[in-house]
Amino acid sequence: MKKGLFVTFEGMEGSGKTTAIQAVAAFLTEQGHRVCITREPGGTPIGQEIRNWLLNPDSVLQDVRSELLLFAADRLEHIAGVIRPALSRGEVVLCDRFTDSTLAYQVGGRGLDSDLVAYGIGLAGLVPDLTFLMDVSPEEGLRRAGKRGALDRFEKEDMTFHHRVRDAYLAIAKRESRVHVVDTERLGPVDCVERVLGVVDSFLSAS
Ligand SMILES: Nc1ncnc2c1ncn2[C@@H]1O[C@H](COP(=O)(O)OP(=O)(O)O)[C@@H](O)[C@H]1O
Ligand SMILES: [Mg+2]
Image (spheres, rainbow, N blue to C red):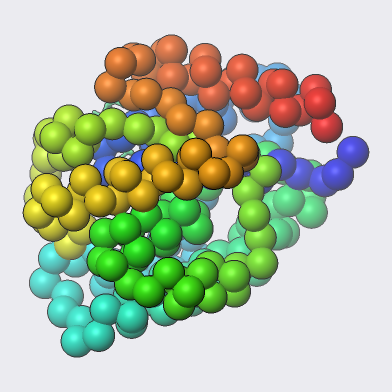
């Protein structure tokens, strides 16, 4: 069997990514898997600096392409420093956001040229084995995220931005068989985790 399993969780803030990752990690650890929980941006020391800057509502960029390249630099360091080493140790890597976020936010949200973004994503050279799109309406996602406190630089965008991000995510799920949509508006946290574990289980028994 190939080493490790790379699983990503996608969706807007408040969609339930962190909640699902924590519960899935606890269950898989119980089953005897070694699990690595990580996130983008911010999975490495330099990545944490990039994250603070990118999410700070006061940060200003003159050229929106810089955002793409900052996310790409965060990702390259993250893959080399955290994800690949964990996979080569045979761990199940549960990653909070990855390349689909770049497509959804930079192309869908910001309207950047899709070839340019595809280049940025291609730099990663790593495709998840499985992806869970934690889907929620922007209204409900922002309501949940707003309960946590001040909104970050992306959360503060207008509703049309968040609707474009959601539509872009759903379009990815339609064309990529690795992506499984979890309706976190209809399903509570326990049912969401059950759905994720069901897919992970069938993937592991088929590989
Ligand atoms: N499936 C769900 N149904 C309802 N509420 C949820 C669900 N999953 C998470 N939540 C709640 O929504 C809020 C945001 O969840 P969180 O996991 O932090 O989202 P994210 O990491 O995607 O921003 C939390 O208060 C959490 O308890
Ligand atoms: Mg989270």
